[in-house]
Every structure is written in structure tokens, then in C-alpha cells.
Amino acid sequence: MATTIQRDGLRRMAIASQAVGFVAIIALETWLGDAARPWQGLTLVLMLLAAGWLALARRYRRNRERRRRDAARDDV
Image (tube, one colour):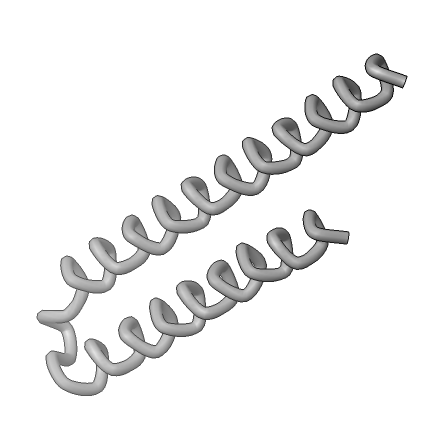
């Protein structure tokens, strides 16, 4: 049950980071017009890095939980 809460937290962070990124891209286009292109690209790169980091964190937590379960099963 604890892993579900952890994954939900990471999922919420992923959704929030993507939402903030898309809002930033739209806001940059509104404020800067065509001059926003490099900043939009940077924002997209940051969004992808955040998504990758969160995916790795989720995988790490899932593997850690699996190892913990396997160790508990071996002890029994």
C-alpha cells in the first residue's frame, strides 16, 4: 500500500511539471511572440528532463520495494 502512495506522489509531480511547462510555453508565446522560440525550446527540454528524472525515481522506488519484498519472502 505504501508504494501506491509513493507512486501517486510521483505521478502528481509529473502531471504538475508538465502542466507548468505547457503554461510557460503558451505564456512565452503570448509575451514574446516569435522571440519566444529559444525559450520555448529550453522549457521543453526542462520538461523532458523532469519527466525522465521522475520516471527513474519511480523505477528506483519500485525496484527497491521489490527487493524488500523478496528479502522478506526469503526470510520466511
